[in-house]
Amino acid sequence: MKEFNTTGICYPDEHYMVDISTRLADIERRVAKGEYITINRGRQYGKTTTLFHLAKKLMEKYVVFSISFEDYNQKDFNSIESIAFTLLETLQTAIDDLPELNVDQSVKDLIVDTLTANQEKREIIKSVFAKLLTDICRNSSKPIVLIIDEVDNASNYESFIELLRMLRSKYLKRATVPTFQSVILAGVYDIKNLKLKVRPDSDHQYNSPWNIAVAFTSDMSLLSEGINQMLQEYENDHHTGMDISEITQLITDYTSGYPFFVSRVCQLIDEQNLSWSKEGVINAVKLLLREKNTFFDDLLKKLDDYVEINKLLKDILLYGNSVSFNIDNKFLNLAAMFNYIKEENGKVKIFNRIIETRLYNKFMSDEEITNTLYKQGDIDRSQFIEGKSLKMDKILEKFAVHFNDIYGNNELTFKEEEGRRFFMLYIRPIINGVGNYYIEAQTRDRSRTDMIIDYYGQQFIIEMKIWRGDSYNERGEKQLFEYLDFYHTNKGYLLSFCFNKKSKPKAKAITLGDKEIVEVVV
Image (cartoon, rainbow, N blue to C red; front, side, top):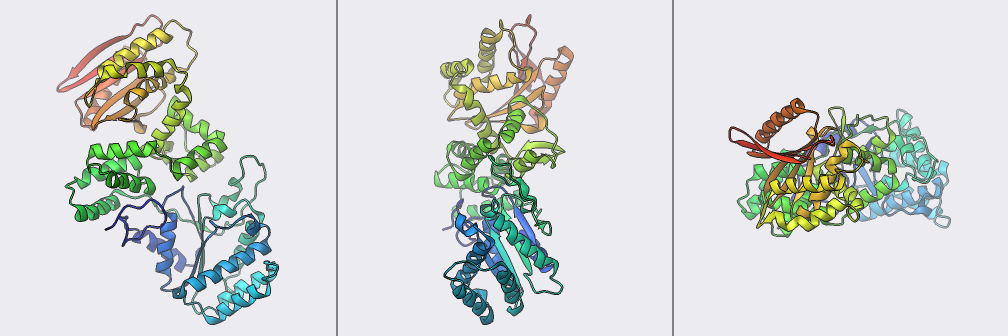
């Protein structure tokens, strides 16, 4: 029986996976044209699975050496001579392990003879290696494609830069000198802009010679159609009775098609025996947000390494900053390369709700221990929970009282837009472990934010905004009524932060047809 897989390569006979044939065909067309290609995506974005199936597909027409720098160590990159020997040794291992490569005997002999002659020093002179690559390509009856995965492991070494220069030189002379049909380099960082890949504690930067390659820009996210097809296959095997269209949309809403998160949500539902329903998806997301995994570990490390990215994400999430997407900004470019953010309508947007919520949890946890509102929310929690229901009206009213008691008589020491941060601090311990929350990015700005809370399948829509007068407030009420239609719910909540010291907390209900808004002014 097939299963969902989130570690290593996905195989169609063993795992539920999205059809990637269109993606493979796109790369194959580029290889046929002799293009050199870079594939750059964030961690666990399906690069290795794509390369594995690409190599199998290309073997019909080419000799394909598909290797990885994952197991290479520092001594392998000490010099161009040492990396030349290790690379050739890797090619020999591939020939021994994969008879289906169909490598010509003359090519095998060239590799074995060169390795034998240089075995003692484990180095190959640069000029000898350059000529050897030419001879290998000349003696092969089929064009050769070289695929290297995990090139990030090499990108801090000057020897790797020299290797790229050698391959580039051969590419430029390809009309007269035999060379690889195509070279495909895959990793997180963009090798064409290698100067961006520097150790955070170092100012030294290299300029990449790899400007000959084209970037693989096709979308590797899993589209709704693909997720739907994968769930249909699962349903055919398990007969759960799920509403495939609804579950597809929910998973897409939470993951934005990030391959790891799509598979992990499905995997958790399957392995934890959760229901294939809205509540099941929400519970799977809740479990995912609490676990340690490679993606989240790497995310936290990157935030420590790049304080500028940390500040950028915090400014967007906590303070409602609207940031224009400028690819020339080094740290915006890096954050996009890691797939933490993406561009939407010219603005920076956090890549998906799961990443966004994990970031909220990280940023808010820095304050929880000392923040009075967080402690008060923890104390008040039992007042607001009745079975599997959440009394949102009372939560907002109680928050208004606490906020006024704590900050009402003090000089403001925070920016106006921080009001929403205080509400999130208050509600986190109330829904913690049961509910999820996220900020609707389409409506986020400095003056207003829509917060969506999922609690046991219930969805609460809370607009948080800064009070700008009665007329502005009335427009906000009208907008919220419109959003209720969008979210298919009849009740919404409006939390207005009024920084007029004469203002007192108040609550009121507003109805329009069959819809109701509970408004609380803080």
